[in-house]
Length: 115
Length: 141
Figure 1 (tube, each protein chain N blue to C red):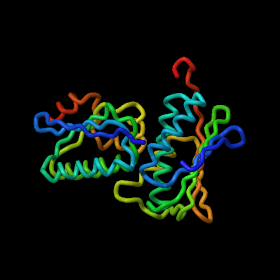
Figure 2: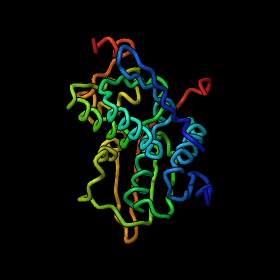
Figure 3: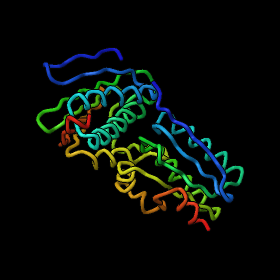
Figure 4: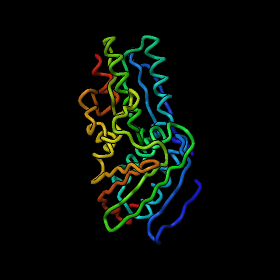
C-alpha cells in the first residue's frame, strides 16, 4: 500500500515551483520537510506549492509548511499555495492557515504574485 | 491487518498494527466501507481526514511509534456515521505538546465532525466521532 506521494519540481523566473501529488500523510511528510530544508539551505526562499494533484494532507504536513513559511519569510521569501481542492482549502481555513498563506487559484497566478 | 470482521451484522471492525506505513491502508479500508455504505464523496474525504488524524495520533502519542494495535470500528446508522479509533498505549495527555509541526490534528477533527468524545482508559485512549453524512446518488458511484 502506498500513497502515490511525489514531489515534482521546476524553476520559473527564480521561483521554485513544487507540485505535490498523491497523499501527504505523516508517513511521507518528513520527505517534504527534508526537501524544503535542503532547498532553503541552498538559499531558495521563494516557493509556489501546486496542490492540484494533492488528494490528502495531514496536519503534520501543514505544520511543516507553516514552519517553512516562517523560515523563508525571515529571508524575505514566501511560500504561496495554488490549486487547492475544496476539501483541502476547507481544512486550511479551519486552522487559520488561509490567513498566513497566500492561496491562489492557479500556479501562474501564484508565480505572478512574486513579480 | 490482523482482523476484519462484521460486528453485530452491521458495522465493521478492523485491527491494524500501529505504524505510519499502515496509514494509507487504514484510509483505503475506511474508504471502501464508506463507499459501500453510499456515503457522499465530500463526506468520505472529510472522514478520511478524521481517521488519518486519529490514527496518526494513536501511533505518535498512544504508542510513541512503538509496536501496538489500533482498533477501528465504524458503523452507519441512518444518516449518521459513528467511528471509534482505539489504542492500547500510553493514554491521552491533554497537557502534552506535539512536536513543533503538530498541534492542529484534533482541531481539524473537531471541525469536521458533529461530535468528538475522548475516553482515557486504564490502558490507552478511545476516540469516538459522530458525523451526519449525505448519501451519494447511486448513478454517481
